[in-house]
Image (cartoon, rainbow, N blue to C red; front, side, top):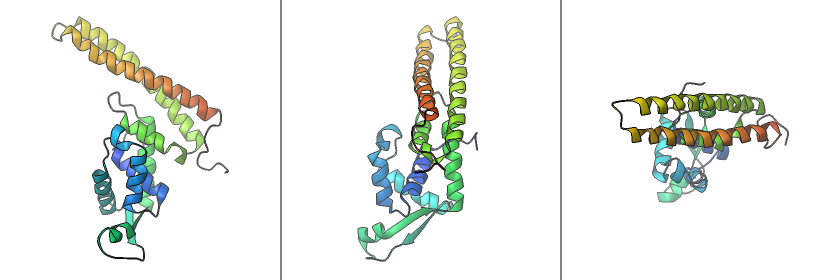
Length: 197
């Protein structure tokens, strides 16, 4: 499902719920904060609980109480979340979009996708990373023309070219990483969906 704008918080919460299910909100929050998402995706504990409530409302996650105390924090911790069939489809669609789509100014969607890379097949990840590499190369070529146009412009200050150069340098770093990732995936690193234990 390419072309979908990826909300990193939604992908991360769906993915962590899927990975830990059935899981309490606290377990999902603990897993995500253990990955440092508050630093690179601006996902704080409050937004994780808010995302869970939204996902339940949207029918992508269901909640059910486990036997146990029903008051205060103990009650909150007895509620367990799991993905619905629609939630599985939404997770897969967001993951695919995060891997295929290139946004030169937002890194969080791709980083969120990397968290769940192995939920797809090796063939699909290989295709996505190959396509991502091609898109990064294309965007870098576009930035070359943007930089030239900026320098030739009579209305833009010459130093504004530095913004284009910074974006290009970030993409060049991502391209280097992506090509190395592609080599690792092709070489058999990791265990992807459908592969034997």
